[in-house]
Image 1 (cartoon, rainbow, N blue to C red):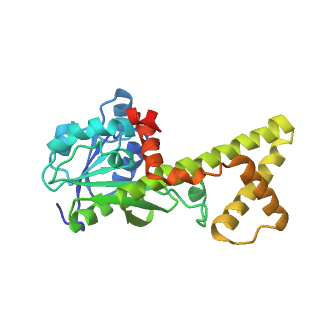
Image 2 (cartoon, one colour):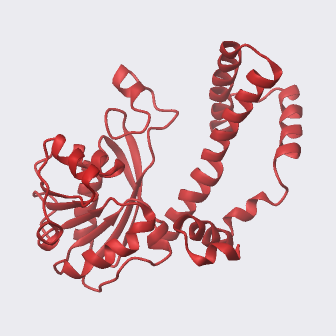
Image 3 (cartoon, rainbow, N blue to C red):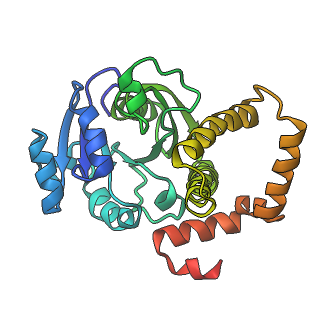
Length: 288
């Protein structure tokens, strides 16, 4: 493994996909040596149109320090089994989501390290000061974000080099938080997709019901919801201001009406296993 302070040799497999393009855009601006791999015609066209040169898989990964598998979750198992046998001793395989790693679908090698790194996206509490930061809701362009990552069976030097790549591909990065693969799987999907993203979609459904069924003018409904969503997050997550007594009564009605009493079971291991199995299209998904 090259020293973390020196330039690294990196291969991006799936460089023409959504996340592949995002991380490649950032890696292209570094001094690292980066090879881009893409087998779909549409993806290959996106890579070449961006000014990057495509490399064949076996050539790209043969001497790579870090190989980024930027492919869909359901393809990670098959892709890893094609890639891992070709890697040199001491290489690092870096995936962008924990599901396949948690389900142990990735090809394994004792002399290869494995890591997962998922972006947190710019915090709702981040103080944006430029138009570019406001426009960058996903992260990786202008708005700083944090990253949560897991690292397995490697050396401290490999982990340090992996963090160098993580900070480059998700830049600008405030901090990288290291957890276990299971903990990362609890964060994504359980905490942020099963709960937070679902609530975001629920807010949109409630907004449309308010506008289309109740008949409240759209601008008035959006103004009220967008402002109160900011207040709800600030109060609920940071305790900035206490909710009023009337609000607490309405919140209690909402919880009793919308939320099941046993909702916290989603944090049970069996529920996590079933949820990830569904996401990956595994037979176990039917056993939930």
